[in-house]
Length: 364
Image 1 (cartoon, rainbow, N blue to C red):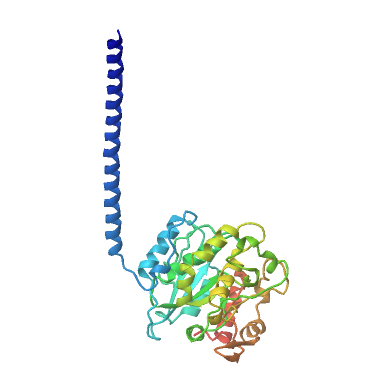
Image 2: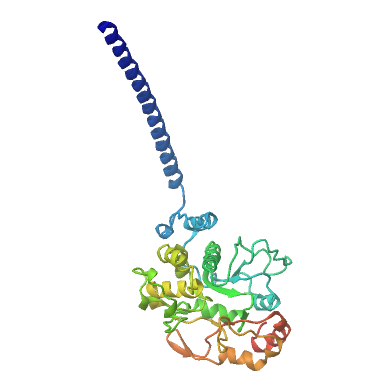
């Protein structure tokens, strides 16, 4: 009886051992299969990366982030392979005019006159509402200028994303050496040749950045920005910038400050479009920035939005004042040409603007 019991116990041990050995064998087979697949995947990825064109700015572009939209990551990755900052001949340099709009371009006829006769010296990019049909005839300078867009809301971080989207598209053209952000309510105050020579001849960029006490300035600072951004580094300014190619590359390459604002500047009174770029430029590129905008805006009435200019407010006197009624510094010298553009001009002001443009703005 004892012998039979011992045989049964031994049989049970052998069965358990065989079962364990079979499971272990299957596990080893799966492990080596996965390892081999991953190794081949890595080799494949490395091989595809070796063939990817790069440039001196390749290491500055942001890695993949789960918080950043996939399509925008693709856009910025394409810039990594294409962006360069090669110096071009002054006669070849172009200015990129980037329109961030809520829909149509009601003042397009005025801009048509502005651009007329200057083909090859400018590029145009329009970011409007998704699915909005921005239609222009093939003869228009705005024909085919829309870029892939996404929803933009006033005061939200997606406005900063839209600005970077415009810059990313504009940087694809290596001849674009200066980048100007405009809205659908902006007008040019000078003719094209004046604007072109002014920005390309500047030794500084034009990003308004100033330290403002009170609730709409330092009052918007959140201590969640620490330790990366301190209160004394916090700046406010107009979103309507004009910058050279070097700064444009730095803006779309920024991952550190961009991510901080994306995560921490979403709630309350933190308006990223008024603080991200001024703060970033103040911290990183203050010495090469003029701390002023080239776009004139009327904030004399206070409130969250600037004053608008409807038809009867548009006069010859007003336009002359906007053109030469200020004093500023340009390349180390005092000048009264401080603003090249102005806003907010309503659609019903177009007829007067077209009438005054040849005489006041000297459009050809």
